[in-house]
Length: 148
Image 1: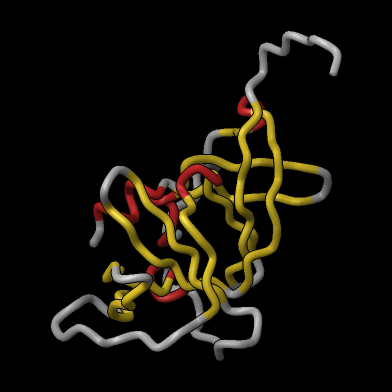
Image 2: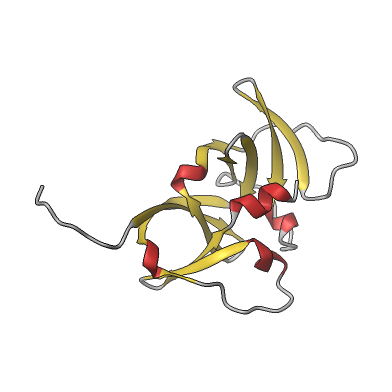
Protein backbone atom coordinates (compact mmCIF):
# COMPACT_ATOMS: atom_id res chain seq x y z
CA UNK A 1 0.00 0.00 0.00
CA UNK A 2 1.33 3.40 -0.86
CA UNK A 3 1.74 5.88 1.95
CA UNK A 4 -0.66 8.78 1.64
CA UNK A 5 -1.48 11.37 4.21
CA UNK A 6 -5.07 12.40 3.87
CA UNK A 7 -6.32 15.19 6.05
CA UNK A 8 -9.94 14.13 5.71
CA UNK A 9 -11.00 11.39 8.02
CA UNK A 10 -13.15 8.52 6.84
CA UNK A 11 -16.31 7.63 8.68
CA UNK A 12 -17.91 4.21 8.26
CA UNK A 13 -21.70 4.33 8.37
CA UNK A 14 -24.39 1.68 8.58
CA UNK A 15 -27.17 2.77 6.23
CA UNK A 16 -30.76 1.75 6.92
CA UNK A 17 -34.19 2.39 5.48
CA UNK A 18 -37.16 3.98 7.21
CA UNK A 19 -40.17 4.75 5.04
CA UNK A 20 -38.76 6.37 1.91
CA UNK A 21 -35.60 7.81 3.50
CA UNK A 22 -32.14 6.46 4.17
CA UNK A 23 -30.65 7.04 7.59
CA UNK A 24 -27.20 6.24 8.91
CA UNK A 25 -25.31 5.79 12.15
CA UNK A 26 -21.57 5.31 12.59
CA UNK A 27 -20.48 1.69 12.45
CA UNK A 28 -18.62 2.06 15.75
CA UNK A 29 -21.98 2.61 17.49
CA UNK A 30 -23.49 -0.58 16.05
CA UNK A 31 -23.07 -3.76 18.08
CA UNK A 32 -25.00 -6.06 15.74
CA UNK A 33 -27.86 -6.30 13.27
CA UNK A 34 -30.51 -8.86 14.14
CA UNK A 35 -33.56 -10.30 12.44
CA UNK A 36 -36.84 -9.29 14.05
CA UNK A 37 -37.59 -11.46 17.06
CA UNK A 38 -40.09 -11.76 19.87
CA UNK A 39 -40.29 -8.51 21.82
CA UNK A 40 -41.63 -8.53 25.39
CA UNK A 41 -43.92 -5.56 26.01
CA UNK A 42 -43.14 -3.37 28.99
CA UNK A 43 -46.08 -1.61 30.64
CA UNK A 44 -46.19 2.18 31.03
CA UNK A 45 -43.55 2.91 28.40
CA UNK A 46 -43.96 5.42 25.56
CA UNK A 47 -45.58 4.12 22.36
CA UNK A 48 -42.32 4.04 20.46
CA UNK A 49 -40.73 1.68 23.03
CA UNK A 50 -41.85 -1.68 21.72
CA UNK A 51 -40.49 -3.54 24.74
CA UNK A 52 -37.33 -5.51 25.43
CA UNK A 53 -35.52 -8.49 23.98
CA UNK A 54 -33.09 -10.82 25.68
CA UNK A 55 -30.12 -10.86 23.37
CA UNK A 56 -27.35 -13.21 24.43
CA UNK A 57 -28.22 -12.64 28.07
CA UNK A 58 -28.52 -8.86 27.80
CA UNK A 59 -31.96 -7.30 28.17
CA UNK A 60 -32.12 -4.57 25.54
CA UNK A 61 -34.89 -1.96 25.09
CA UNK A 62 -36.32 -1.85 21.56
CA UNK A 63 -37.39 1.40 19.91
CA UNK A 64 -39.59 1.54 16.83
CA UNK A 65 -37.99 4.43 14.94
CA UNK A 66 -41.04 4.80 12.67
CA UNK A 67 -43.17 5.41 15.73
CA UNK A 68 -40.53 7.64 17.36
CA UNK A 69 -40.31 9.84 14.26
CA UNK A 70 -44.10 9.75 13.76
CA UNK A 71 -43.81 8.04 10.39
CA UNK A 72 -46.71 5.90 9.13
CA UNK A 73 -46.81 2.34 10.49
CA UNK A 74 -45.96 -0.46 8.12
CA UNK A 75 -46.08 -4.21 8.28
CA UNK A 76 -42.88 -5.92 9.30
CA UNK A 77 -41.30 -7.81 6.41
CA UNK A 78 -38.50 -10.22 5.66
CA UNK A 79 -36.20 -7.20 5.52
CA UNK A 80 -37.17 -5.71 8.89
CA UNK A 81 -34.13 -5.58 11.17
CA UNK A 82 -33.22 -4.61 14.70
CA UNK A 83 -30.00 -2.62 14.79
CA UNK A 84 -28.42 -3.07 18.21
CA UNK A 85 -26.64 0.20 18.84
CA UNK A 86 -24.86 1.56 21.85
CA UNK A 87 -22.92 4.38 23.40
CA UNK A 88 -20.86 3.84 26.53
CA UNK A 89 -22.81 1.33 28.62
CA UNK A 90 -26.23 2.15 27.14
CA UNK A 91 -27.59 -0.15 24.48
CA UNK A 92 -30.77 0.01 22.45
CA UNK A 93 -32.37 -1.89 19.57
CA UNK A 94 -33.74 0.18 16.70
CA UNK A 95 -36.42 -1.38 14.51
CA UNK A 96 -35.77 -0.37 10.90
CA UNK A 97 -37.38 -1.34 7.58
CA UNK A 98 -34.10 -2.69 6.20
CA UNK A 99 -30.38 -2.45 6.86
CA UNK A 100 -29.07 -1.44 3.46
CA UNK A 101 -25.30 -1.33 3.51
CA UNK A 102 -22.07 0.00 4.96
CA UNK A 103 -20.64 3.16 3.42
CA UNK A 104 -17.41 5.07 3.84
CA UNK A 105 -17.89 8.81 3.81
CA UNK A 106 -15.48 11.64 4.42
CA UNK A 107 -16.15 13.41 7.69
CA UNK A 108 -16.09 16.77 5.94
CA UNK A 109 -18.80 15.65 3.52
CA UNK A 110 -21.27 15.74 6.42
CA UNK A 111 -23.40 18.85 6.18
CA UNK A 112 -25.40 20.36 9.01
CA UNK A 113 -29.05 19.29 9.01
CA UNK A 114 -31.31 21.48 6.91
CA UNK A 115 -33.58 23.83 8.81
CA UNK A 116 -36.80 21.87 8.76
CA UNK A 117 -39.66 23.10 10.87
CA UNK A 118 -42.13 20.66 12.34
CA UNK A 119 -40.29 17.48 11.44
CA UNK A 120 -40.41 15.09 14.37
CA UNK A 121 -36.97 13.59 13.82
CA UNK A 122 -35.23 16.98 13.46
CA UNK A 123 -33.83 16.98 17.00
CA UNK A 124 -32.29 13.53 16.42
CA UNK A 125 -30.49 14.48 13.20
CA UNK A 126 -26.75 15.05 13.43
CA UNK A 127 -26.28 15.99 9.79
CA UNK A 128 -26.82 14.89 6.22
CA UNK A 129 -24.49 13.22 3.78
CA UNK A 130 -24.91 13.59 0.03
CA UNK A 131 -23.23 10.74 -1.77
CA UNK A 132 -23.77 10.04 -5.45
CA UNK A 133 -27.53 10.47 -5.78
CA UNK A 134 -28.24 9.44 -2.22
CA UNK A 135 -29.11 11.64 0.69
CA UNK A 136 -28.34 10.02 4.04
CA UNK A 137 -29.69 11.36 7.30
CA UNK A 138 -27.12 10.94 10.05
CA UNK A 139 -28.74 10.21 13.41
CA UNK A 140 -27.56 11.41 16.83
CA UNK A 141 -27.67 8.17 18.79
CA UNK A 142 -27.04 9.91 22.11
CA UNK A 143 -30.21 12.02 21.65
CA UNK A 144 -32.23 8.87 20.93
CA UNK A 145 -30.79 7.15 24.01
CA UNK A 146 -31.55 10.21 26.17
CA UNK A 147 -35.20 9.96 25.23
CA UNK A 148 -35.52 6.53 26.84
